[in-house]
Amino acid sequence: MKNRALGLVIPTVVIFAWYLITDVFGTESYLMPGFVMTIKYFMDFVFGCYSITIYSGDFISNIMASIARVFMGFGLASALGISLGFITGRVKLLRLLTEPLINAIRTVPGIGWLPIFMVWFGIGETLTVLLIALAAFFPIYLNTLYGILETPKEYIMAAQMLGANHYKINTTVIFPWAFPSVMTGLRLGLGVSWAYLVLGELTGINLGIGAVMMDSRITGQTEMIIVTMVVISLMGFISDKLLKLMGKRILNYDEKR
Amino acid sequence: MMKKDSNDIMNIVGLHKSFMILNHEVKVLKDISISIKNGEIIGILGPSGCGKSTLINIAGGFLEKDGGQVLFKGEEIKGPSSERGVIFQNTVLFPWLTVKENILYGLKLKKTSREIMENELIKIIDLVGLNGFENYYPAQISGGMQQRASLARVLIMQPKIILMDEPFGALDAYSRMIMQNLILELSMKLELTILFITHDIEEALILSDRIYIMGNRPGRVIKEIIVPYDRQREYGMVSDGKFVKIKKDILNLLFNNEH
Image 1 (tube, chains in turn yellow, purple):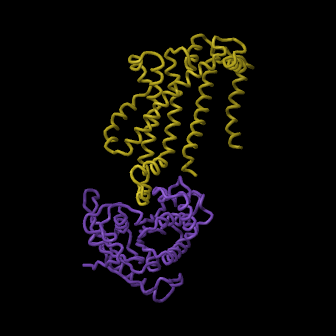
Image 2 (spheres, rainbow over the protein chains, first blue to last red):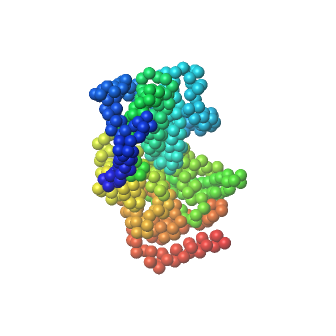
Image 3 (cartoon, helix red, strand yellow):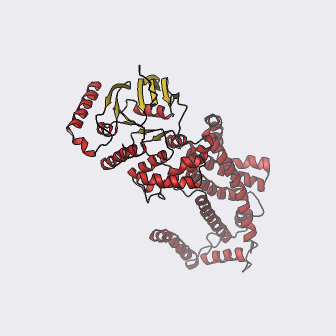
């Protein structure tokens, strides 16, 4: 309890400082919007109660569009990352074949893929989803791979001695052992997904939190920029918690137990 | 040449094994011949690096041999099997399973019925003294308890022989004593056949019916000793004059072999 309380100290100080600097001492609102004003804009975005912006009350439609993109991109990255990670982890030949290519692609940062994706896919849904998938793929793939490679030989020996065949070794030994690593990869991938969501949406999509963010810069409503940043942060936080919960449902095993 | 007795549950004949280390071929085991009869406890005693672990791994079916024969019930072994149960030095219980789930792992693979599994579990837990710990995770119990669980998961499969790789090496002296006693007790109750390796002379003498003493570089059998005690042993035997003398003889043998 005390640890949680300590964690809240700095955020509280920051918010208080924000309030002081803007609402008490006064700053240009286009540089740093007032704390109270930003809260108002947030409420308006969600509930449409003040009608101060064109986004008034559009929170749900925008957030749903963004969530759908993250869902698809992350889903694609997870499916590919986990299955590829598993296969190359278990079959040495495949790993030797694919490793150089994967490392080469990995060194190009996701942003570097934006131009060629724009050429191939144009601006829009596909671009964003694929960008997210590409960025999220690598942490998921790598962590899955390492989790599998790190399975101590003795566990496999013990399982063999007790009568496990190849398939059973994969499901009853390797998977549980590698699972915490896979979870780490998934959580990293999810975090990266939100970042690349914003990047993808900045390219000129109509609906989405990132789209609102970029749009409000152009229209000079700095409050909305802050609001959308907070929303993304919240989404990242909540989705991470949900992922952790899902992980616990599948296998409630923590190495540090 | 050894006579093959049909009462031998396991027979290792002229075993050879080499490893490639830094582009050199290192002979780890040279012409090893060991016989184990049903119901015997056989100790393999030797210094570190004499190839004991390699020997047990080959007997367990985890490692390929280079030459010779490894016979189990008269036939060459083809890989690991629950008939040749293995107790590893580092327990190797699955950390994501409880003690109970670990013990039942092998039976579950055989699709044994729930009822039979529960019955066998109760019996075995009682035998190894793990009552009350069924739902704990390995990380939550002591090293000694973990080895009991490790023993239980092998015993429940009703193996024909149990192979032990320095099973009590990681335990403190007291726990080791308790476990050695447990092994002696169980070996009588269940008529177990055991092949174990150790570097501890006292342990070898306390547990074994016969000891094969191994030398170093390359690993080979230098002497076979029949331990002059029957299975009803007490821990007090370590201070016994006879015991101390045998221990001294073995020490001399090992020391002279090194120099």
